[in-house]
Image (cartoon, rainbow, N blue to C red; front, side, top):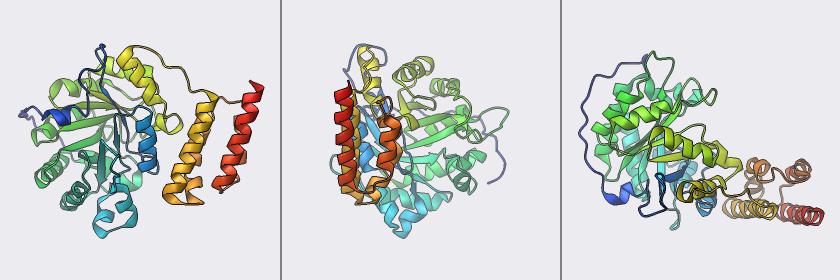
Length: 353
């Protein structure tokens, strides 16, 4: 795509979304605070937001989940990985399927396949900053040409029957003025039903601080739900992000990898104004076991054990001898051995308490 193109002024046509879709982002009649019921959403993360982790997150308070991002070309070619990513179980709801690609027509075709999987809605990834994605014009690469991005979103909206949303960033970087405010209006104008804003530029990746003020500015300009994302690591962060932006929901990504309890903690603070205590040692060990068992059930040994390891550092954090426990688990690909290690260490920690 070419260098960043300006967006002309646009007057969006606003229309109220049907209640069921709106309620994905705020449940009515929950709590008394100004943010009560506002959704806390699991972000789409490659090799993280799979069916197993979505279920764990939902059990611990996530209101809505988004799949790992799905390559449009892979989906259309019948790639096994892409098919796995869009397969949703009967209890995997509400969940959105996120797709990415650089060709508008192929994205629209992939959206039809994703729609057939019956997600709650389809999300378009216009925010992935990884060079091998953005450099090819997909993900955040769309931000180099916002006019083309809006036209692509319009095509997808017109192709499928279910709601279409967009996840993006404040700009590609380093624009003199970030395009997200005008872009939000244009996307609403072509029928996009909600917008998630990661409040960094694409060139920032995950470095530097997220600037939530851009989400606040965008929210003032549109009537569709706006979800704020970036640097939301704790319940206090979630509340502060909503306080500062007026957004409809928060999306949590990397913080959930180590600490899925963050969703329960957010719900307690937003709905009841209370801080939930940290997980107990027993809860930490139980999370390790549950995730290992579920991943092996879904993917078999040894892969199911291996893909769980990235979570264990956080699950075990704060326990006496946590580093030694992790090292023991690292050298076993057997579910039976890992469960035995966890039971042994659980007893050791309990006895020492």
